[in-house]
Length: 211
Image (cartoon, rainbow, N blue to C red; front, top):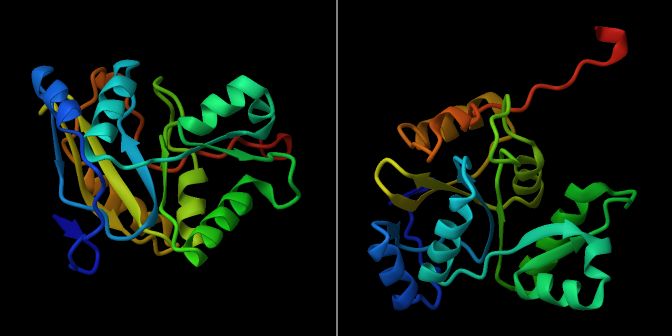
């Protein structure tokens, strides 16, 4: 297993033998030895099919990580829906905040680190199972701003394997960081390979002044 500084990855969770057995029956396996810290951002690539959700839920249960995700705070105000979303690991964020969603999430990470609470945020950098021209920037900005490691999770239909072995710290040099991510994801294949997005920042849309 690889971590940026070569140290052991000691943080483990309450693993589920049942979930691992279900994955094995489906022909899948999880390659995992631990996480480097109690807080971090995890991204899953590629995301090309609705089946990805099923595989990743079973993988999450297999390793026992209580992964979180973010959502609009307005949805959490609905009594039953909000309670269910929190149970699933949802974190309400105010998109209208003057600080912005990224700053809100960084503040959540700072509080978790101060309290030594477990917080791993799971995101899909593509943001959709359809092909896009690159990755959205939210995961990058949060991991960099919060100064937490980034887990690069490979969802590989070619090997029918979920591999959670690569962890990096972002440098702020996007070209260099994306090159490292592309190296970690080399050879991974989604269920629909043509729908996988390139491992690159999503190009900015031109403004009317630049068209």
